[in-house]
Structures are given as structure tokens and as C-alpha cells.
Length: 194
Image (cartoon, rainbow, N blue to C red):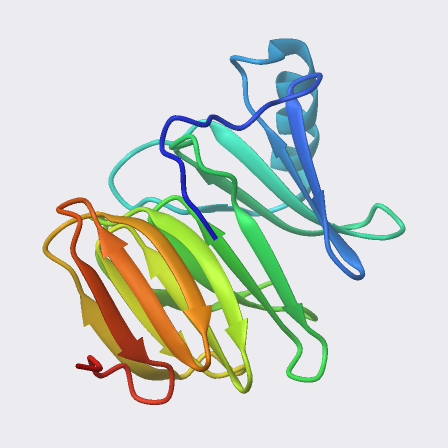
């Protein structure tokens, strides 16, 4: 997967819609359609608890996870960084993994409660999920995590420069950073392969 920092997400009629197997993610931003945004915001603030993704800033973008019948499963508010949130669903473990802004939220599907947040700090933007065998690799701007399908952290690595490209071949994760450094990591343990 290549990451192009120049590319911006496209909103249509004020919303981004992303679907996965059973659930869909809808994003509403006031810059793209203030009327639709206000309509959705008024509806959800009366009927749902809105999870604030950032601790110290007031994000204005609204996100909804809905089931196929249009029922709202989870509401969140965050600061839009120009990177689409991503949603993974694991029905066997009953968990959503939502990558948004500077975080990955691990959410119980039945209750809609956040059961874990990765990472604990706010300095590295979420980029992508890579599902590999029995784990998920979470890529942030300056760090990566490997977790199991329950959300337990298996290993973690930090970077001194921004990740700009990544790919996987034969259980080896290739990470390229801003300084044109390419480093190869074992998917199993996160160690550098020489």
C-alpha cells in the first residue's frame, strides 16, 4: 500500500460513506455541508452519547457506525486530519476496530462502549490497518503496533521519521520513512530483519 500525503479524501454531499461486511461508517463535516451536519448533530446529541476521540481538542467532524438497517451503533467526534477513518469488524470476538485521527478505538459491538484505546498519547496520526494471519498491524505516522483480534498488544515499534510507504511480502513488513530509510520487520515479533 502506498500512502500519498498530497491526496485528500473526497466528501460527497457533506459525508463520506465506507462499508464493510455488516456495518458502515458515515462521516459528516461542517465545511462540506453545514445543513446536513447540523441535522445529524442535532439528532444524535439528543439520543446518543458522543465519544470525543481527542482529549484536548474539540474536533468538529462527526462519525457514525451503523448496521445494515441504519441503526446507529456508535457515535464519535474528532478532528479531521485529511485521512479517512477505517473500520474493521470481528464478529467472532464482538469487536470493532476504529482507526481515527490519532487513535485506534476498540469498541464492543453489543454495548457500543470503548474498551481500549491505542495509543495512549496524541502525537502520531493513524494511517492504516494491515490484517495478517492471526494479527492486525496498526500503522501510525510515527509508530506501529501488532495486536490480536481481541485487541491485546503483541508488539510495538516507534520511528524517528514519518512513515511514507509500506508493504508486506512473505511475512516481512517493509517500512519506508521520510528520510528514505527502508527497514524490514518480522511480522511475528516486530524485530528488524537484517
